[in-house]
Amino acid sequence: MSDRRGFLRAASTLALAPAFASARAEAAAEEREPKSFSHALILAGGGARGAYEAGVVAGLVRRAGVSDGQVLAPYGLVCGTSIGAINAWFVATGQYAALAHAWKTLATSNIIQLKSKYVTLDHPHAFIAVRIRAALRLATGLTKNESGIARSDVVLDWMKQHIDPTLPVLVPLVWAVTNLTTQSPEYFYRVPPALTGVMPSAIQRAFRLTLGPSAVIREASDDMLHQALFASAAVPVVFDPVAMTMADGTTGTYVDGGIASNASIRFANAIAKAIDVVFVDPRSRSEHYANAIDIVIGSYETMQRQILETEMRDVYFESTGKRAVLGLGPAVAHRIERESKFMDTIVRDVPSSELAYLRPKQMLPVGFASFDEQDKIDASIAIGDADSAGGFTPYSESGFRL
Image (cartoon, rainbow, N blue to C red; front, side):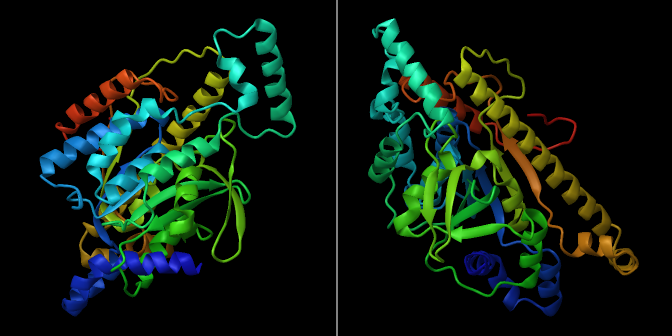
């Protein structure tokens, strides 16, 4: 809980500084409408399709006229999950050229490698008997002592080359993980060194309402940054779960944040007045599944899409409902608050955000696991860059469907 309070204290500073200098009426309004950051950028998960997000960021950076080391206006908060968490780190630290370089050279990095005993499964020149034995080892291992088929160390080595934990973030960065030990979502964060302050009770209430009373928010220290980011992208069965020990001595086993929250919409909703979400899949799609792994990934993505759609709708209707009540005027709003404890909670504590999104109009050339196909990665980057020129689409309950 101390980690959570620490983040919330830091999160409140940016918007609360003007409130401290405002009249008492404005301070009271801030307490009723607790928002710390005016605008949040959310980068969803999606494997190698995260190349689209890199293209979107490149387009936004160019049109905003910012350079490396500068904040990507208007965003005062960046959130991500899975590959979106890794992309979000580059954005939060202002490393736009490094983000572009990382994706432009990704295929040569060979970051997805099967464990040695399963390599023959993917080798076109292996004898059929060898491939059968490898398949049997895999089937046996996954039911006994094997928890993943790909090498985690290769991805961690890539992160060590491209992500410097000593580099401070320019704006707060938040990413989602899934704690298998407790079977619950958790959030890691990094904040700029200068962020300090006193957390108002309104922001505490907003987090309790949007994330739940047992939500865990932890600061990712320098020595655990790579593991915490990798945990957000550790797709079950593909990678081994990530075991981590926290500063308070608690331990946990972590996997892909997309299981619980493929885009941290709920988190951003508590502290941002406007939320822009980048998805990597179009509204309509048709998938072909060639093998069991494809089916597992397809089922996994279906679950993620439904969770995302529910989060978007919930935030939209809650925000719309609150604005409708407040739009009735102060006298009516106060009367509703007095007469209904439920409505009092909505008017006082439920956060309100404007939602918008950006996503490709059709399936991207690159697949979920196609980290070794540079031509398709480059094409997806170009699509994201071009799409960013059209801006984000405001959410509507009738026009949005994942």
